[in-house]
Image (cartoon, rainbow, N blue to C red; front, top):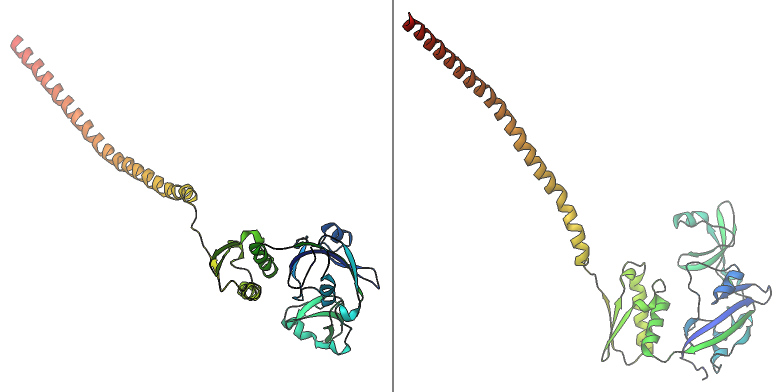
Length: 298
């Protein structure tokens, strides 16, 4: 199978600058580590492109037309077919206070985004910073070792890869697609709900799908917020209730005991008084009977 314009492709490549031999980009994890380019927040593997959309330099895309799938090749691009020649007019002196306002630390060689445009800091003075709005690879001859790994045919696979380009922070397999005639519903996973720029990304996904899938007329994004599972709720609810209820029960029991104690104390002297009175009465009766006995004897 050969590649043609408009194909949805998975491409592996390593990019080097011819003048220095420096590796500046790659889709291979091991190569990135060897070239000290590896980043933990980057996923390595074949890169998805739609041939002709400009996601790679135009000279490279033109060279891929007619390429055989799975056959590695080396493509050399002069500056005019890569990122263009350097333009001295794109060098600017910017007041350093602007960097402070945008909370950017100007460091020579740093790639930044200033006023919505990518730039490279060339030098930092007392009150001004020299920035270069040329592409970092402008004026360089580029050497690509490239291989087209796959031409995508399945519609859902194509759409999921479009989503991954626009929302790279979330694994594309977590998006669910539902087709109903000419209508497409995209279920957005929960981890994407609060991503910065999500609405802009959804607009870009919509534009890509409308452009490349004429059979799809309506695109809906569905965000579902689910209640906690009953098992979780049953584990949490009793714990929250048991504490206060137990405390109240204990307090009630203590109150009964404490209220009963004064009654016992109040009753105790009364019983003692009745007992002592009875004893005195019994003693008097005994004495009286004794005296009566003595009188009869007399």
